[in-house]
Image (cartoon, rainbow over all chains, first blue to last red; front, side):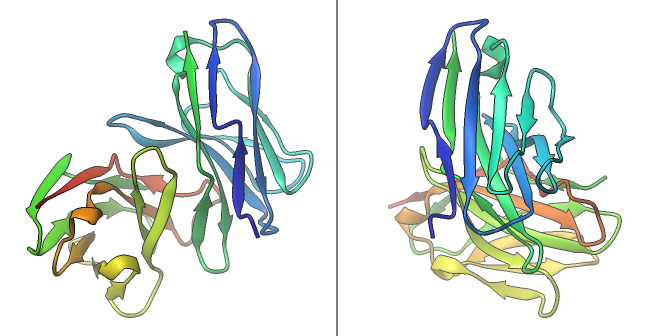
Length: 112
Length: 115
């Protein structure tokens, strides 16, 4: 049982480049989330999904797109990266029965 | 809307002394409350949660937290701090009658335990 995994762990992009971050969970959770963490800002919700084929915007969705084609995977895309998107990105899934959110190890993204 | 406040950016405690990391929250319904810890260059690790029941919740690594409904607080405590407790701590809240938009986090408190 790997829990929540994220790939890649690190990435450096140039402004304007695109990339996709992959999140996978093996706990059969319906709900999945993408957050970004910036110093002094805590975690801010980018997008979330309440099930396969569904997505919704969070607090800071601009510049990001997401897809949930399979229940176990939640992809976060940056179509045209900007330096303001330099951050650490965390994926999470939630067990609503016990009310606990499980986090992946994070992806550190630098946009130059 | 739900919100969390962690009023201290940093808390300094001598090893062996008791520690408290403060958290207050705001939700429209009844809260689900959580504490997470983050070590450098690592993800968030779950420490403890309050869903219902006893106001004093015990969690991992000897930490506990007290839910106070009248003061809308959920302070994290430990009777005797260890240097290894030094980390970034996040309080989070979810409205138990709310939607699917996950947890709302505070900005985090750096806990520094001095030998």
